[in-house]
Image (cartoon, rainbow, N blue to C red; front, side, top):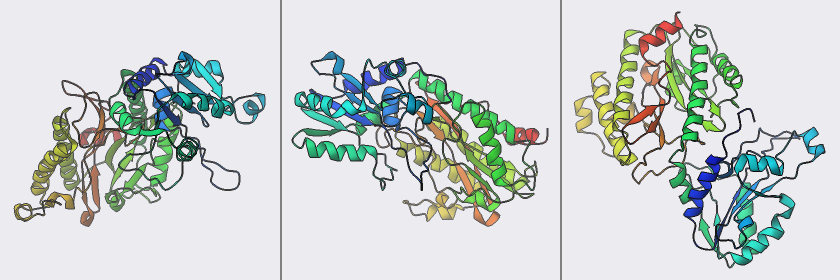
Length: 429
C-alpha cells in the first residue's frame, strides 16, 4: 500500500459496534475480494472488499475475518485467517502480512494461516447457533460475477445446512453510514489530493488539449501524493460529451469555446473523494455558459442547506427539485405551463436534470447508508446538481463532498476553487 498505516483503534471500534448488533451465539464471516484475472497470466490490481476492510484494516487477498462474540474461548471471539507468507512469496509477490503485522494493522490477536480455516471453523460451528453471511445488498449492485464471498456462502450452506443464516449487510449499511473521525480525516486527505489535481490541470487546459491528457495529468498528481489513483473511472467530457452522464472514453479534442465537465476524485487509503468541476476550454466562459454555471452553483448551495440529519433522501431530492425548477424557468429552458402540465412521476425539470443530487460516500464512492430511513448524523455525502442542454452542447455539473454534523455540515472540499471567476483567474494566471 502507498498510504500510511491507519490507527488500529478504528477497526477495534468498528468491530465493537458490529458485534454489539449480532444475535446470541452467532458468528459472522467476511471474506476478501478475489484477484480478478483478465487473460493469459494477467490480473487486475487487487481491490479489497470494503466490508472486511472496514472491520479489520486488512488490505490483502485471501483473507477471512471471523467474529464470534459469545465464543467460550476468548481467543476465538475475533479471528483473522491469512494467506501464509514465506520467503518465496515475498520475493515473487512482495511481502504479505505476518501475524505480528496483522495485529498491528487490525488489533486482532488471534491470527491463523488460511490452511487452518476448515478445522477451526468446524470447532466454532459446533458451538454457534447462527451464521451472519455477507451478501452484496447495495441498491445499485451488479452481481453478475461470482465473488469469493458467494463461493464461501455456498460452501458453508452445503456443509452446515441446519444452522440459521442471517444477513450482515443491513448491519453494515447502518454502521458504515456514520463516519468515525479517523475516517473523516482519511476522506479529507483524499479530497486534499484531489485539490492538488485540480490546481495542476487548470493552467494546463487549452484549446487542442485531448481529454485523456487531462486525465493523465490528474493520474500523475494523485500517484505522487500516495493515492492508488482514481476512486472511480474519471469523466473528462468536453462540449457535447459533457451531456453524457457516464462518459468515460475521454478521447476527444477540447475545442475553443466549449466547456469541459470533469468528474473525478482521488482515493486515499481506499477512501473515495468525488468532485465535479466545469471549466471553459478557452479560459473564459461565455455569458450563457456562466449563466448556466451560476444557476447550477445556486442549486448546489441551496441543496446543502436542505441536506440534514433526520431528513429522508426522498424528501431532500423533492425539495432540491423545486430549487432546480426555478433556475430552469429563469434560464428559459422550461415554462410555467410545462410545470403545470408535468407528470408528477417525471417532473418537467428532469428534462435537463435527470439524476439524483446526492449519494453517500466513503470506502465506496456510492457508499452504504439508509435511503428510506432518516439520514444519520455523521454521514458523508456528495452534492452534485447539473444542467445538461444537449441542443447547446453544454453540460454543467458541480460537486463537493460534505460531512453532515449536528449543527450543519463541513465541506471537505472547501479549498477547491468553484466560483466561475476564480476558475477563470486560475486558468489565465
